[in-house]
Length: 575
Image (tube, rainbow, N blue to C red; front, side, top):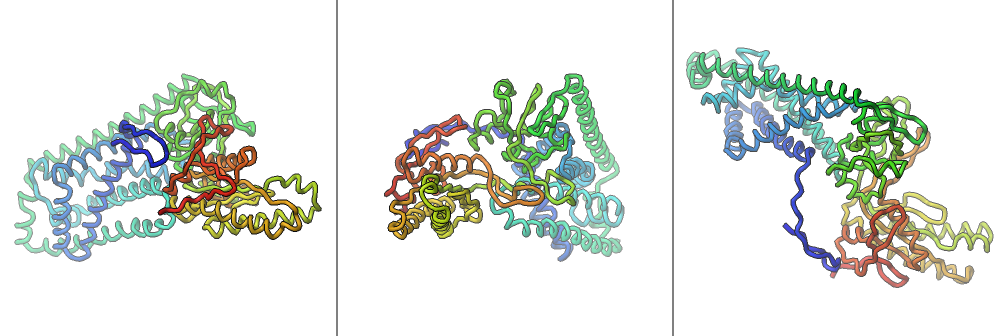
């Protein structure tokens, strides 16, 4: 569907071709379908804490949800896609200092088919291929009374599948706003669901063991219509062996393909990745820059774990000539670079696989924590979040310092910073850094983008009021008015504790911060009180008025912004 332009933005109506899903999106989508199935399966198991009848009732509901033709197509399609992409991830991943959680997620995923193939054949395929109606009574008898070892394997398989899904959800959600507040509840659910499910299986198994002592019950519930005959059992066993062999063969092929790739890369030569501190890492051709950093134990930020979902691993290619001959960004990398407005020479380390020697400069280096922390690459850089960044600076402070006593200069600058800080805090922002005669403030640390952007626009008006009051108070002593400039921009930035092992502070880094600082720097030459980017008004849901295209140093594309003079309000109120 076409996307209409916002009123006043002057953008033409145009149709957009739907973008093809990336491999990551396919893996995520199929994983969510399978996680939903496992969740309903475990919730039904938990009903065993009530009674065996409750288990059967829950099973009836689950069957109604998942055995319709559309649901079966969705489920089997998701299973096939996720399995194939999981094997591909195993082939693609190079184990250079991979984080334990990432390794656990991958290995758990590879183990799921081995643990659950018997359960799938004995229930789902027994129904679809042989027409055998096996409910909880039959399954619990087979796995609790007849073959407890098989039941232990099935329970382990379900727990492994659940943990694999929880790891995947964590890697997906941890970059989302609101995750820190929801994390305790999600963790509680991740623990309680499998525990209650296993307890329900135990209670159901005990009930079936008691019922199995009754010959009449055994004759009715364990007949051929439920468990099948010898021929049917042999056919299902053949299917089980075939699926197991096929999966093991696929794993073996992936391992062989990994070995062949390593051999080919070794035959194809090595590339050297250089870093600003003089260190050089030699890796096989085809390795990514992030893999080179991990192999060389060079701290390199990567909040998303090298999946191309964030920009924290971004690097600057030091040699401009070399950057023009690098492989073009793939779609996943290109989308991230476009989202952050990256300038030429900026690439994602996890996606860039140079075919020649290269020197790079990581833009975000993880902070080295206490020595007791073994992993120098823990995500101490924080997280990527939407923020609104405000820079304010007092103009003419150098000339003022030349003409006044040092203590007078400190007094005036202190009063100016106090006035600006009050306006920021009253609007709902926080002052993050004092930069000589200016400061940097952040909005959106605890609010959604719309409220953050509106609060920042309110702060621009508040600064004007506060500085005007300060001018009236100091008019008799100074003989001139204090003049200032404000730059305001919104977007994604890295928020967290940054510094070294002895001193660190909470701050933000990224292109959003750089743009806000450059906008503030343009207020003087352009004789404006404030320059607010279009992105702030878009986030606030307010019309920006007249926009002007500005060319900023280091950015290939111009930026649209609203220029605010001495008497113009920044925040345009609704209604």
